[in-house]
Image (cartoon, rainbow, N blue to C red):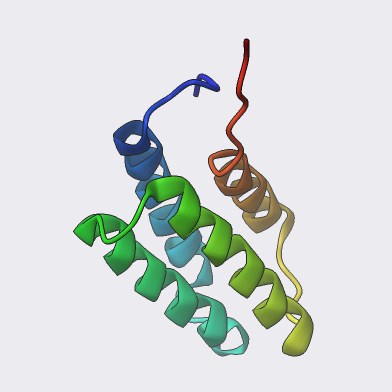
Length: 95
């Protein structure tokens, strides 16, 4: 995705990545907290409640709080998906 991509493009990509993460978590009881977090933010992205970068930024903070609090280990596939998701919240301003 281009650094100058708009909110709707970021939202579509974020929803796709969240769905992929949800699929990789499915059936793993030790990761249910992450699944619940993704469900909340997926709903928020779908409803366009706030700006997409703001939603993604809040999700990143809460996600890493959950990961450290519950000492959850992620697979390498899940880590790659999370890295892609994090990139969506980074906006570069060029002059």
